Image 1 (spheres, rainbow, N blue to C red):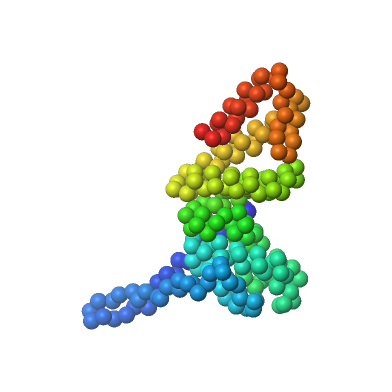
Image 2 (cartoon, helix red, strand yellow):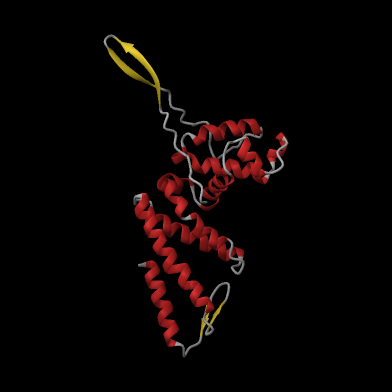
Length: 222
């Protein structure tokens, strides 16, 4: 997810001036609220889905979740084949004028977060995706445990960042990644620790390791 995301439409007003006696005023264009587009239904026609995505892109901060839902639907059902595209990457690049990274970012937002969380935290959710992806891709964690772990971690992180500025959230998440993942990797490599998919086994006499692990957990939640 290293691409720059161009999600915001800066053309909210037209350049046409309307003469009102001696005063020139800017005529505001009618805002498309996309009220007809909901998570309850997705058009079966690919062209209609493309039109919806284009409209939703203009209101990114509010509709990222819905864009991700539709992109996932297209990808899962290989609807791009209807227009003779060889793969999803080629389709989003050409048909939607969107990079593959951006497309999968939208999908990740839909898969990881709720509509409410997306509206509340906005673009700051981008900072959480790499962390949640790391847990998702961990093959040592059983799926049922993984889903619960992702949900708990997601909820905790959203609470911590939603009312912060982007820079504040960025610094916070950077610190969490340093404290949590780097230390966990060090602990997993330690010969006196046995790391299982759902637990960590420490020998009773290894008091120093027990203390270090407790300290790590306390720091993570502080």
